Amino acid sequence: MAIKVDFNCDLGEGFGAYRLGSDEDIMPYISSANIACGFHAGDPVIMRKTVALAETAGVAIGAHPSFPDLQGFGRREMQLSLEEIRCITTYQIGALTSFTRNRKLQHVKAHGALYNMAVVNEKIARAFAEGVYQADPEIILVGLAGSVWLKAGKEAGLKVASEIFADRALNADGSLVSRNQPGSVIENEDEVVTRALKMVIECKVTAINGNEVAVKGDTICLHGDTPGAAALAKRLYDAFKTAGVEITAMRYFITK
Image 1 (cartoon, rainbow, N blue to C red):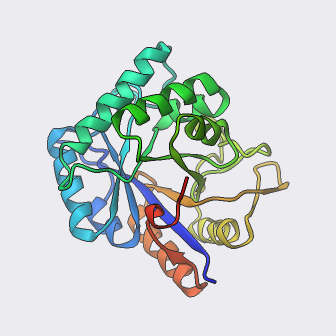
Image 2: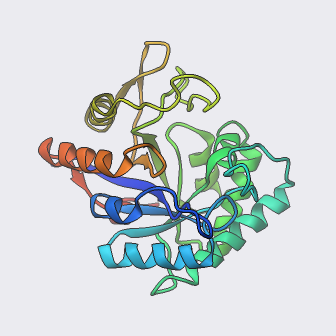
């Protein structure tokens, strides 16, 4: 039986006159798009255009909610109440859903600091998951493999997908290396491809301290703002195909 993996990318992350990444060039190689919802990036026009790109390409659409932090691209920690986290999550999902053809999203994945804070704070993860459930109980919640994200999603009544990262370094405990630390983003394309194949096929990866750790992901992420992301997306797509890995949207194999 072929190994299946969803290939996701964060897209629609421009704002106004500013553009970030090459969404049109990335879209042919991925199965799921995480689209910014206006709080860390994106605006109504960019959201509509990115949704249309994904629908034309047959790529599954997901919301990418964030803290309200345009200036910091959603990568600064903010101290919101749990109720605020629930509500901004539901709000952003609703905004993106309005632009979709069938008023339906496949998945939701938090962005930046919100994602990383919830990895170590189950209360935040649970509040986010509750906000997702309020928007649509059929949506899949995407969270870091091995983290409390998955437990919180299941407890909220959601389907969950465990996520691994092609272009980010991991600590020995499986958490993402902070972007404030050197080596947090892997820039060597050969290394990205090699690591991605090992994670998907062998369920192993070398942590930043040199130790090999076990990881198991349903979906693998490439960041759209990674330098050369479009060319790297193609390389990953080709490498998966050559290795016999089937790239398919998570909705086709994720169950409760």
